Length: 179
Ligand SMILES: [Zn+2]
Ligand SMILES: [Zn+2]
Image 1: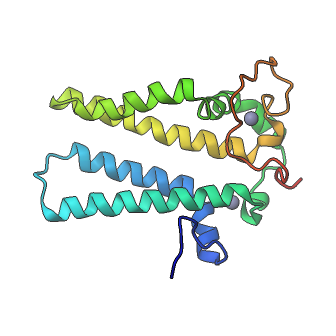
Image 2: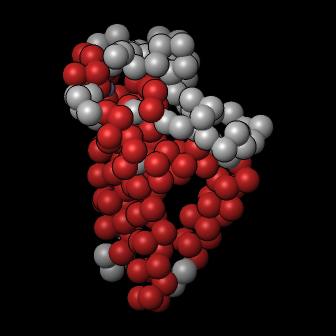
């Protein structure tokens, strides 16, 4: 009964949940944007929906972290044969994934993300929705980077050598994907 923060990660459901987390999170963000943009007066139902969305995001995010720490058969099976070619096209996503672990980038980003909540009016709400939707690209960048990490120039140290002194993104180091 006394389960702490960690989530049980043995079941197939948890594994599947973690594997699909980037898409589930993207869907939840879109749902949150829809809730924020639609002109609704807050009722018990909308507040409950927002709360459930928040819980869903937190649980999904925890499963994603668990998933990212281990080898995932589904990820390995979906690895493209020409992974190196894929990776060459994703250099911008890789840079973004690395920036995502850099507090000097993430703190201002989070300030904009939270600050956009105070925008009002139609234009303000559209601006808010656009700012929130950047999270989806960030999640997908993280996902692509994790999958194609062996081909990431910054991880393999073949880049400019300017690695900052910041941690690498949360990604399996010892057990870099199969292949
Ligand atoms: Zn997976
Ligand atoms: Zn990398």
